[in-house]
Length: 372
Ligand code: GLA
Image (cartoon, rainbow, N blue to C red; front, side, top):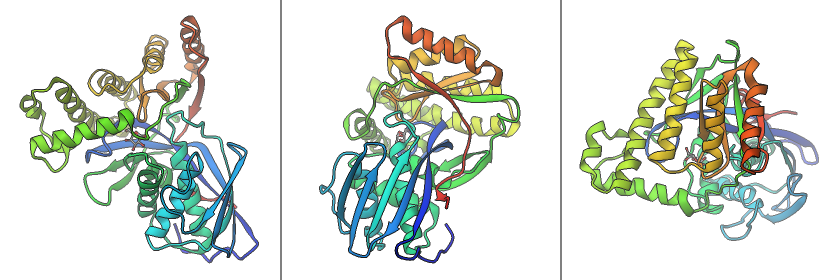
């Protein structure tokens, strides 16, 4: 984000922040591992105007509701969808940046609850809008971590930093190699040429709803903390392959196997992207899905069915993306095969009476920014 003059009182600015798809490197952003997401060309738009009375009003076109709270909001004040907005205001204030107040109107084409980081898109959109209104200059990585803090400590979802980093730092035509072993994490754009080479990345929103506020996601995190302590490591992703021999409990052993093999797959995927080796990238994606299904146990029947149908109908590879337990799967397919894949997945869902999924193509897009 570049230094900006504050937006004058009464004037309206418009900012936008995208959702994300993770290509590979799932459930590694909270164990110090590498992840490889893209920001996608679906985004949340925030129209914003300064107020000077220390109040923030957010109107959401997503829910057709508005919520008002103080710029000094604290965890517990606001719940529902608006807690992502209020959490960002709170986390910015905790970082020393208290807004003087704002009217915010948000709309979004990132589907909610689809595992495409609609919440990170709201957080990052609001963060860049407030920074723009106030003239704050904030490094995008720092801003992403502020948004993550809002999500963790205000909205109550114990997530890692991948979603906010992808939404904040996305680059058109690039995937982002994010290494979370260091504090702060590093973000390196990696050219992603599958579109130029005639392939498409298809998202299937299975409409099986998921949530990361506690529950299974929190339990997986807790298991990785237990493993890290058991093995006496700083970060679990640094575990050598033979570390699995030191773990007796079969569930913990499987979780560790996912972390170790997925970390290796991210490294291989970065090489496949550079070599434009799409069959290889596809194989790695599918192997990632199998590991998430069998070892990390975060898939869902709708996700498994999508992957199976996609692979049977021409996909080079397919996998669930994001936290899992519902949400979306992705498939890499020749551009000419998108319609056949869409039809095959729809037919597979219809056969067992699952609600019809939504299938669309995404491309790597730019991160949070001012649009007018
Ligand atoms: C969710 C979280 C991320 C990450 C993924 C799994 O999307 O928000 O931080 O942990 O799950 O890779």
